[in-house]
Length: 410
Image (cartoon, rainbow, N blue to C red; front, side, top):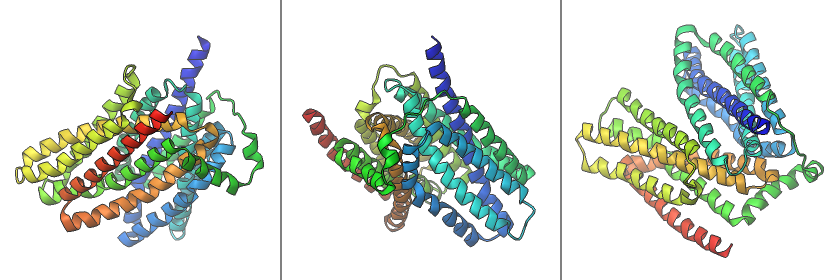
């Protein structure tokens, strides 16, 4: 009875710590561009700032996986949150140094982005260690619910607080948030099992070993390539195709456009709760089917854009309904996909594997947005929706048949 209580307590503490940190990230990321634009008044500087602050974290990500595989994961996330709190405190102390503050802000943001990357990887691996394989999908569902909640509430509160009381109060809140997150995670009961051969080997050998694992495990490799394909072809939906259809083509106001994200997030919330409560359906067995249905719904967005034009009310209502189901399906794919990868990737490789996954996503999503932007400009956002998702359907069919053969051989 006590073991069961401690088991659930550890999971709750980790999820609570993640939600607090995720809320902090969402809170700060919406305020930072507002502050930079207000203080500099220069969009070019804003773009340069975010490019310079993001690139180091992307480049460092593959190497962060090595750190996660070698060190105590609980200690990593606690130290990450304490360091993040400390760096926000530095920003608070130096706030009055107007001449050099932009440089300090840039340097601290680079460091915080790197810390955030290692926190994300480490907390994911720690989650695998704390949660049993048979309940991993359920608890990943509630984790997804918490992460999405933080991503929704954080920007709203951040914008309000920055608008009313300014950047300094935002920094005070960030210092407190990350310190609170570290305290929650400190009480997780966890025993670290050292992997001896990793401690003695060279980092380059370990990095190559992670790539070797992915390359020689065909099922993992297929799912990895599938995830990257989805990031590339679907990654531009929110940034390019949705505003292109709703705002540019149908002339629907930006205020109403905001409801499309709300509809999507409601779908993700309900999916998270469904996965947590679900005891009957093993969603890992239906990942390909769900991606297939999701792509069909996205094709419908493009097709209905032609069929319903110029009936904006009918199309907008249809779009909101489709967005709800897309949000539901995306979560019902992402959660079991992550769970499958966590279960079938040996613990000694998980840090490097999820670092590689994160690194590849961070590269392919911007490239996908760029590609979708050019295609939308040439052929229209609705055509882009249809073309991209037809390609996804073909990829799904290919890998579904390939995976069926793999399972039959097993």
